Length: 82
Image 1: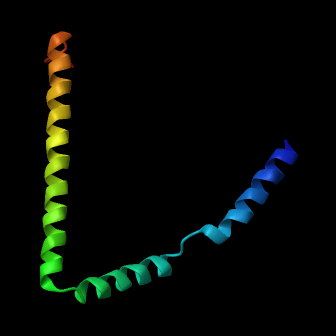
Image 2: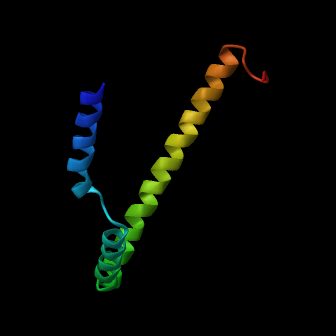
């Protein structure tokens, strides 16, 4: 048991250099904001269109999943049960 615990501690100690610090995250966000601010308006609008299309696809997939689950529940006689 002690050897297992020590091997886990060694792995944790070895992985601590891979921990992402909050400062690095904040700086990365700042850098991305600077890059986005420097883009031409047309490129920003194209990115917005891409994000809008992606959000639309996610909503459609969620609606299909919900419809499918409701159909399964009604076919199995589960509708209205709690």
